[in-house]
Image 1 (cartoon, helix red, strand yellow):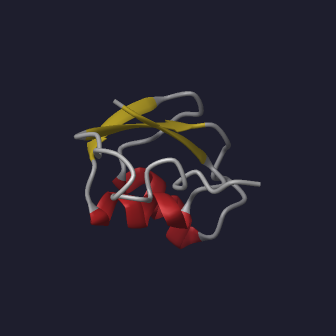
Image 2 (tube, one colour):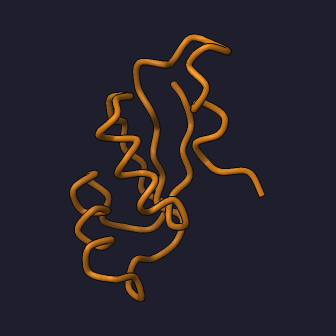
Length: 75
């Protein structure tokens, strides 16, 4: 299974998008508390909700920690 980050992880292959659309696809109820706080820090509260965040290393690190709960798209 490919990582959600694999489509935009290689900077050499293509130009990076300025923003990322992050959608919460799974409830963080059973997740560990640190992952719940990461979901909240990204601005996500309800399943199906989407937010746009800057495409930078900090955001990518947050996404990597909760990759099983979110779907990521370049905008």
